Image 1: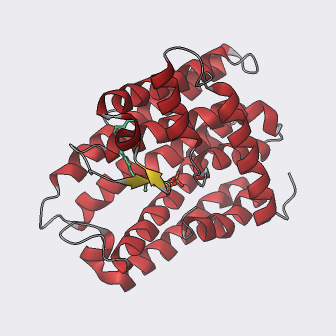
Image 2: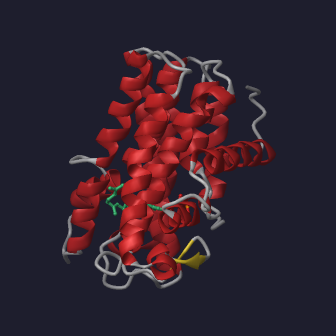
Length: 287
Ligand code: GRG
């Protein structure tokens, strides 16, 4: 892939992801209709597709065709969409809207929303498992990366600590929560792209560190955004703990950390390096 990565190129990748996501889901006209409609509603709503784009860019940096890496990339987005449905439920964040439309439970009811989240989560692993493009040993590595991002050291654990919303949370505790609720999925996305390209353990480790730093920068930017729009009152976030300037500094330092992690590639990951600035711009834009 060309080092001259541009926003237009990222748009083309996002469009490719959107097209494949639509193909990978059952048609809303097929039974069970309500479930399929809710899955499509949540998954196909306009999102930035940052995580699947990272899978595609990482795979491309190993010379893997975009088409080949699309299914694992879409699997990451399915897990992300499932987490957003669950996060929005009244018993969690109780959100009214998501991606510019009523939250899934508000449009389809809580019962169907929960089922749609479980179905999307499950479908993600089915999509990886049935892809004919990868050796079973590679698919297993991808499944391991994605499932560990969901579980006890991932999204579920991060959400549990986020729900507690204790006052007086330490910086270290907040960093752990942010890693689990946000950065782990970035790490899994990049690791899956690396496995698609046949990366070895040293490369996987460096690329995971790149993704961790990028994910943490993303959360710092998200916290800053919520702070500036007054949506974080009473919540422990980087911006309420460190102030707006502190959260901004944290984001910039994390972006530097992402660049630093790529040095292991001795110049072969220039496209990923070029993506940092462009993705940072996207992170600040709500789709
Ligand atoms: C079982 C998958 C599963 C999850 C259960 C509910 C839960 C545990 C986790 C929720 C974690 C969560 C919602 C973290 C927030 C991450 C975040 C900042 C999301 C926003 O991401 P963007 O801005 O959204 O990339 P778009 O809409 O652009 O995709």
